[in-house]
Image (cartoon, rainbow over all chains, first blue to last red; front, side):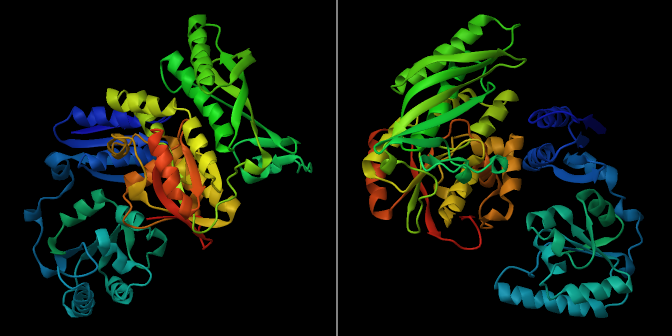
Length: 200
Length: 318
């Protein structure tokens, strides 16, 4: 189930209302909302996020293509079923959602994270990908002690993926030192291609 | 935009375009200065009588923000010939009633034909030159008072989308059509250092102009800023006018937010206001007295921050 709505040329709040209507009409699935100005992009994104949906966007030729996934249906459509993937160490993907491992003293958490990166470089074969989300994106940004470790892993062939929404939120987009910026769509697709271990 | 006009050298022009203030002030004698201001805009509500009141309250507000008293107003009207002239009558009646409430008189006006209706007033007021207020008098140590709750731009956007509740819409109308006269009287009684009114550039935009003109930094306490009930939910639903994003963009690094200030509160602080309240900078030892009088007069005011010596930003929000 995928619906596309073109909101180009429409002023706020019309793009939000059109997107809301399209989402209300489906139980689950994907709504792609196309807008042509920053305010509409922000408003549609905000609306969909607060309604509990997964949102990602791409900019293309002055237009913003906002992809909204509602319910389970949307995710099934993009994710490759895990059982088809060969479960080897080489297909291990780490989803890192924090810059400090575990609950407790933050200082200890940072030390553990540092130690995690030193150790993971030594593990054979190296992980297929590291996905950095939420505060995890800070690991790949200027000032982080993990930047060098991540650069080393990237050189060896590990894909480093940083969540764009998270970089925006923490205002770190121009401080990313390693890896590529990605959206929820790609991240979900990537997670479907290997065994995912979450570091939280 | 006004920066491109030639600079004026007239010692009697007490407030000109340089400080992005609310109105022009011209001294006609040692104890009297004339305040001149003009404001008009297209309707943001369907009811023409209410629109007239809001437009008039908005135009009169600039006189109050300078510490003055409005005397005389002239109507400015744009009106399409395809629309029933009864609508125009209602707009003008709304404006006249509001001007009357302010104790001033409407002495005529001018109209032109246009595709979309627009209405407002040119208002003339007076002030004693030594009692005149501008946005440039805030000093470190002052407290900041805001006299109306925020969120009318967001509510107007939601009204357009037919998504605002009746109660929320009614509150927006109540605050937009409320005169700033009681707040102005209170600050004249107490004696304050600076004032501006909150309109299209949003709370933070006008606060930044005050900070720039006064060469200080304003510290804003976001949790204390009054917000019309229902506005935060509408902001989270994406009912934010494009003007709020423009205001955020134009202020750029001049506003620094603590990480704890939620996104929807930031949006409310950038939200362009229609006929908003006054932002008053008052010395700390008078702030309590000012708040007491405002409370007695049922002005919905709140203490929203303080003034510090200038650091590397105009506004710091926490």
